[in-house]
Image (cartoon, rainbow, N blue to C red; front, side):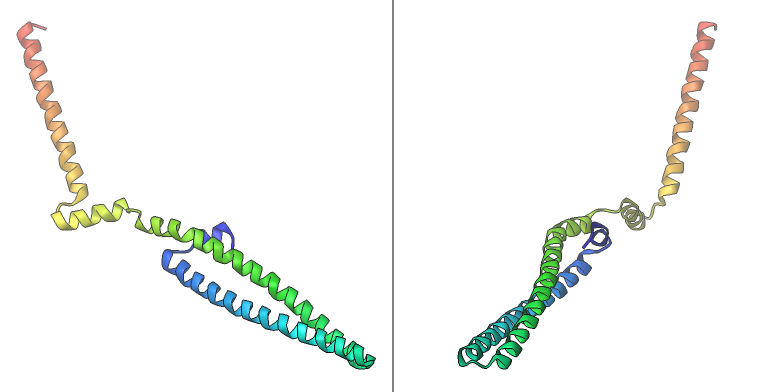
Amino acid sequence: MTPEELSKLDYAGAQDMLTSYATTLKLYEKDIEQTRSESLLWRQRADAAAAKGVSVLEQTARQQADELDRKLHTLEAEAAVIRRDVEQLREALPLLKAKQRAVDPDALLAELSMITGVDPDAAANIEAERKALDQSAVEAELAALKKKMGL
């Protein structure tokens, strides 16, 4: 699983994917164990056929055991990939949960506006008007002081 794939997941999606992958991994492990025991059984049959001198049965049993060994290697390789993905998902879950808790400032502002009934844009306009009034009052006082000083 690539980091890009992990970054696109949300927490709930990652949990669902982890559960799915873990279930699949358990099925693979059962298949691996069953294939391993079947391969062992066919090897024992080949040894028994060799001991009795039946080469045709021995050859057939060894072919069957070899086929099961190839299947076993394939299953083990696929299980290793799934196991790696499960570990990556387990490591990513806390990060995804923390990312889920992150505060969206715009959403928070919208909620606050709804609760207080004050439009944030209107509040900004009021603040700008107040600053302009304060500035004009300062300029008026400065002009009065200059007039008083004769400048």
